[in-house]
Length: 393
Image (cartoon, rainbow, N blue to C red; front, side, top):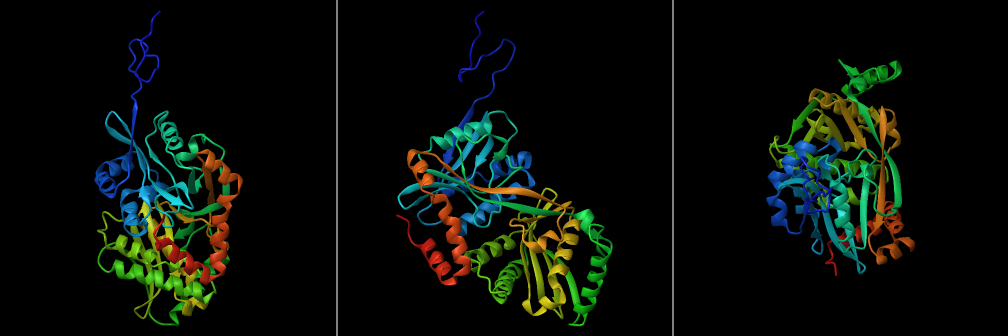
């Protein structure tokens, strides 16, 4: 019996429609990226998962404005099925020390890397084939969640795992109750919460407030980052990411959007009208992601940090969120509020003979070591910040 085949070489059984082909395209310019906005948003509405907030067009648009380097080039892989955008790999191409590197857009703002893709068999696999044929030497995937879309498909090559962490999360109905902490906390902790409130009230008139993007939110976002820097400095910690002026500028721009187009939400504690603590979180599809949590070091002794976390949980629940993701790493203080965790991994995949040689030489492990050294050596971190702005060759 003769069976006709589709253009892809697949058997077309009589009476059955062949599987639509995937048309792939690379967008490498800002104009093309911006023009994708409406289609990208529709794909996100259909297929996006809460953690893929960091692959949303709105977030990456602001990221590109502040973080896309002079020598970097967008390499956004788009997949279309019957003309409709069905898949997006938001990548950027960089050249480092003579080799060609692909990375996901969004770093260091984006806390998870992933691809946006409809639930269609063979779609992500088609993307992998294009990545393997892209001419790049390495693909770096930062903070790939165990429950990500990309993790559902087998990797085409053996990766080098450079880090393995946990992203802790809190369930709002366990952490929030009327008037204070919920049943997820011990009776002792609920009593301590009331004691912290009394101690804080001794410092002045305490006001718990919330906010959205727009209005004064941009100034508050800048103040939040400045307060975070102060708090870290008071503990002898230097963060190259937060010290970078682009970090503050990014959140200020995101906060300047209208509340309908920006996922940014604010939770604040003021004492006598002065900002004492602030949380910058991002909402997406019923989940809140806590990004910047900062308290005035002058009030650290009053348990302000725990009060701010509790206020952030309550604010998220009031907005309709069922879960509050505290992101990786799993710092010790987060465990007191956690109801579960999701594993996240940093991976580097060799895509060429040069890439395989670099992986065997241990190159993927150099960057984590450099980051660790920068945190303990501020001078080195400042040199790194300067190097990021130096033209790439």
